[in-house]
Image (cartoon, rainbow, N blue to C red):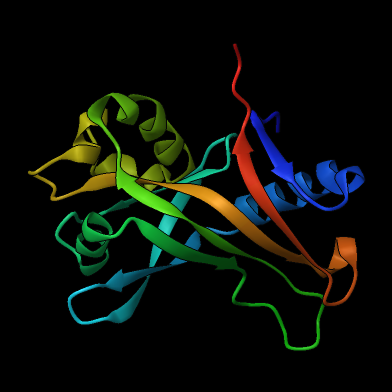
Length: 176
């Protein structure tokens, strides 16, 4: 997948291999564990949600804007995310992502480009979504959220070896 981002790693030769692994993990999984902070109670909160992603290393979730995690994001945009295949066997070659980033609701304009990604990946969502604006609908009590990734810790033991983590920051390429 062609991307408009730059990953900053200690070994630039592995950059393409790391990006390929990153997208393989995103493509082969459907649920992410989202961690937010409840500032009032000073407690972490975690939930699982379905996600889609774009070529700029952004994740998108569709959820209830009145949910605990949505309320937490409204007060503190910092999030942590885990993506992995929960069917992996203990002792096998593992792969997964640990992500730090920020989250926010996306605008109705952004829904026009992100909504189709969601409908393509989750075809049954079209039973509920009749127009793209339904993603940000009071009627459906739904909202699309963007998770902008800042830092990734990637584990892909098939590609990089046992317990060989690749950690990188994500920077967008600004075109003049």
